[in-house]
Length: 258
Image 1 (cartoon, helix red, strand yellow):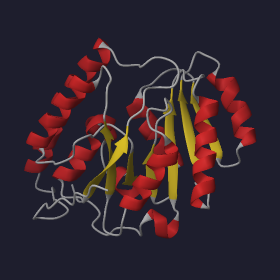
Image 2: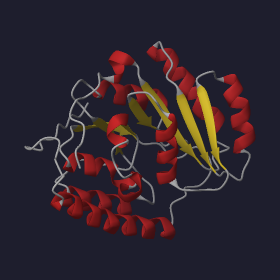
Image 3: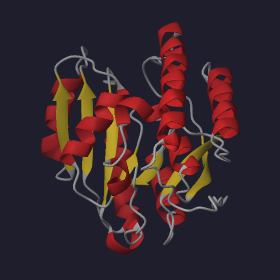
Image 4: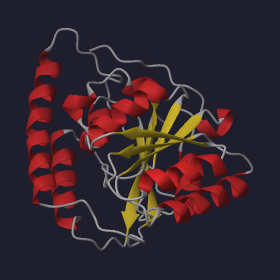
């Protein structure tokens, strides 16, 4: 698989970045979230386009989002009629976003956009292909499963990323070349690191969710393990393919902690 080597300008230079937010039954968080996003843009001195993808919410999210999309000119909402999962949200985003970069956010306010968006943008310096947020002082029921998955990927992909499945900013042109269904959203950064892309990470504060309940459960844990096995099969078959070409033969990763 031949992948793009040239890199676009950093998002702080071009502002060609879209904030993508997946959401499912987050009615209690949405108004606060967009107040925080508006404050973030005021502090930055410019607004970014925001694409919120409602993944089949059954609460009052659709009504709230309809009102918010009229209140905030930077906001566009796309709704899945039924819940399709985060990987399908990624696919929907890729079919609608045209900017050079995608910044992946959270609707539950465990990530505060007022601190985290500037941190990710600042860390995305020229030559960097992706930036991962690294949750600090994290205390939630997903911690053990997340730690296991991160360590497994660090071993398999020779990755130094501490927190793969969190907020991130990634070059869109890279994402369009990858089989998102096989990689899934969970292991995207590990694959990029293993392929030689320059992935950096920045510590970000973790917050308890403001409202609602986590979607994590046994089913999510099972699907994560299944996805990892499918990923391994794809990874080793792609490496043995005669068309496989890593981005950088020395596979050096750039890690920075700000």
